[in-house]
Length: 270
Image: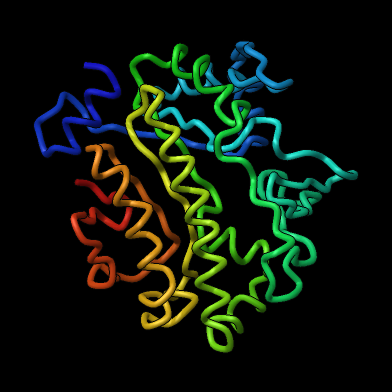
């Protein structure tokens, strides 16, 4: 039984030969593991990046999932020592946290979207890494990863404090900003039908160690409608739609997304 078959059996509540597992590490830790374990780095360069960099580590761990980015692999560019800019124009300070970093001054300093440059969801380079990664992982479950997929993208553009104030003072602006981000995600999702993948994985932290960062009322007002839009497309095509959020208290009652099940806060399935 392949890793993909094993995951699908569990998704459909069927008996399988084992429980699927996945061990993901930061880039820095992955490099340390590769050195300590003496694993040879495989090579396949796409847009100047080695997209097989940690394949040997995935094989060693026996990982069940292969993640494909929803952005060009070269879209995050170093603009100064320890500073990087992503495809939306957000500047990240990675001098301490090498993987994500902290966003710099808000790109949207004012409540205006006319100067926001939305990336091209149809650009061929966005999907240039798909074919080699898919061919190198024929037995694994393939998920396209949408990082900073909505709330995180909004506050990285606007600033956390500013966005929280916007929730109260200017709901119309928040809805417009979320609509722009969601429209982009939907266009990327539509492009994925051209590839042999198993689903989409959305990461969007709404909470901290004690609960949501906003009230349940605000969550229903701003977050829930946009996720209904995002999840409707993959589920309409019988594709797995996975979601993860950093919330540490039970809130199943809030995520009653139509036509979806919620499984342990992680998976929304048809």
